[in-house]
Image (tube, rainbow, N blue to C red; front, top):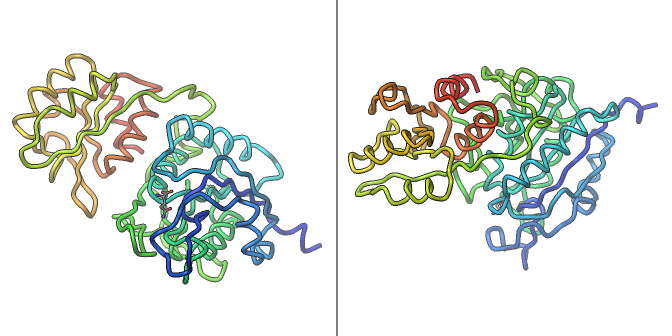
Length: 334
Ligand SMILES: NC(=O)CC[C@H](N)C(=O)O
């Protein structure tokens, strides 16, 4: 009787440190990612069976810095199939932390479901002392199986916090307290119970105009970093390589060096979308026509999206429109 009441949660494994293994328990930072299979991961946390009927699928086994657009589409399609299945209540994706925020945001944009989708990783491999993967996975399954998590968009459970997949970013690469959102976590998950404090305000999942089922491929969008003494080499190279949009990783308010502005104006005339973002450390906040006349140049601003998230939205948006005003609307709404 009790078993029937438990939610059905599928864990899709993609690799990362949560599936990593090191030579000794002292190796918290030196290890190989993407080693341990999903069945072994699940077997390592027997308490999962108290939360849900859990089954796993190995979708890929890679370190997340090597994830491609094709990998994203493959994962997104599998998530959509499972979300459509009546006997699935929630989905967990185990993932390397380096690009976890990109995958979480991508799924948040394209999955047409209100079922919980939780992306989770770890900062230490399971072989290390004080490994964080077991608890993060336990918390992910708890949230994925909960009714309260429905309709809240794709979520990330790391370090006891429930973060919005849209906002969250890896801010630190060695502490278990690695993932932060400039706007704060949505809630906490403690001993398998979730506590909610706020809701995402941006469009996502059910309320999104994007649908993985209609996306055949993702366009080439490149990212170019700005700094003192920067020149236009990277921007030109990205355009020559066929970029449909370039995310400008600006200083401060997405500012653009006077040595780069003429090139970006030219690239825009050639049809490349120019999207201004910022590399300030605690979260950028780029405003239109501040620093640069975006209306005049027909550029777009990424607003609070960091450059890697701006690339994700630009790719998804460009599957629907080539119009810069539409693109800007999407950057305000998502
Ligand atoms: N903590 C991690 O998961 C990092 C491991 C690896 N670089 C990855 O992103 O998959």
